[in-house]
Image (cartoon, rainbow, N blue to C red; front, side):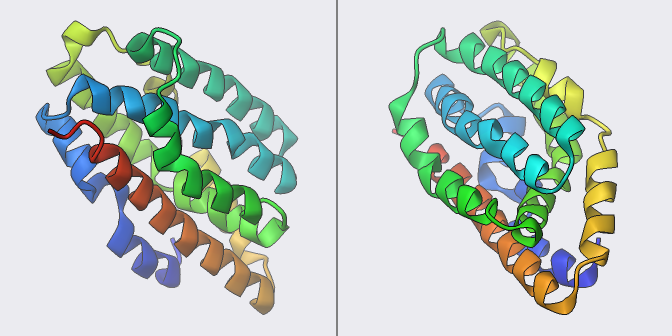
Length: 195
């Protein structure tokens, strides 16, 4: 990861977010995980749009299948019903990401903010599910699919390196916006049903 991206990420690294720390300590309530599953799923659903704009139709197709895996995770917690609070908590992230998916450079920056963290967070969440939430029968397939998935971050790094100076600035801004958006979405979800 390039140094400017590392500096941004150091302040918003998702594995250090209190929501994921609580997840791995077994401290989240089912309502919070249900809100996460339904709300965060709205972000997972739009990832293929970014890959399509980045010129990677095959990866976009794979991400569509990953969204189907996410839906299994959501259904295992919500029984197929939508959790409205979770959707509201992630609305700013989805809106910002869709806006970023209007240009190649911003799409690559947005995708990189998510995909670069995905292998670590997927492994961490899977571990937390197995250690603390076994009784809830959460579907694990989405998280299993992303453990050790370093190919997409590496591809995005190559794409970032080929951008001109102006495009680099757009990509870095989109990367920062997405890191902040991901962090804030988790914070909003964590606040749901906290009492």
